Image (tube, rainbow, N blue to C red; front, side, top):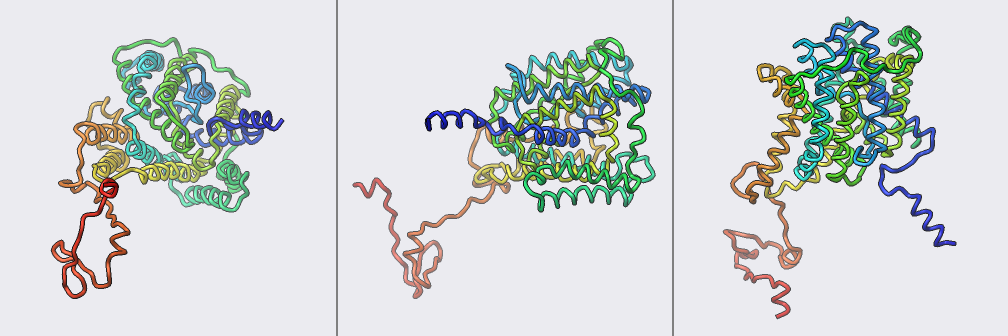
Length: 499
């Protein structure tokens, strides 16, 4: 009987941290928290692209709804997985912001949204073929690289949180006002207080509770507007090819293929980052499955009027804060996204959350991502190598487009697509420098480089026991307190002792 009970307990225990299953209500609550965390990010690309395409307000709303719907399906595929598709990690999927500039350039060239959709479909199909080969470079992502990437993810997202905290709309009269900053500070303070003083169940829901409480307070202060929630249809299923059948242009496809490679880099970084946070094994096969999920979702998304799909870095921070690593929680968030995609009224409720509230939450989330990267970098060996310069140059390279947004303004568009993103530029530099310093002609750099970390000094305990008060070293000789040289002998190793 006891043997049978032991076997059952072993079977029920999750094989991996991400396979943990929670009860229904906590799973749903944490899933909603994931949706609220990334909602602002997932609606931003269709909002920008829709306005650039000259769409009406209703058409932009349709575009946003379609992106929510596809993002939910892509999230379910990434977390639950199918054979060869899905990393089975707690990663939320949505429209990648890395392709916005390229898609706007395609729109400027004529052809409208159908040309954009055609480029996304074609480049994603090519990316589906390339995904397994890209995953082969995972051995070039040791902790010195992943630490840089994770840190860059967090730091690159902080300007987004800052923009939200100021009010998001730079043309608004209250942009950066004291009430907006104060509301962001309130949501951040609530996270800190709930995390510190709340019981475990409350602490893990601190993000969701902060969003809800801060929004209620904002409404009482007249800083939240819910008047448009009931405006428009309650239920609407996304219509395939609502903006016309896709058209295919070689130049547009090539430019989007560059975006796909950038998406590969960012998704690989996110998979490695969440694997580090969850403390689970991330293999080359798993990365390939995650990239395939990205590409098949991206290839299908234009059918339902959406764009390139990618993992959302901000949700990695949420996993790190809540310590809830279950992929089924994120899958529940995917279901919520699908529901939002067919129930625009619910989407309008979530959209009514003031952006300053999201800003305060974002500061906590994105800062936590950066801290996770710093923790990874703290485990890197810096002795007798050039890992220090790898970290320094890569992080600096990744921060350049953040501190000087126009630094690549005169560069070709393909270069801007890659290096205007702090995440992808830091990743590219970290990988390249790691190859140069740690794979090509690898050698010790204990001497001759100012960037090589000084080796740690160690003295045998036996030597300390043999020393007496006043003993000192002069010109390499050990002298006693009277200046008489102390005789030194070679330490016997195990072989000498045996002989």
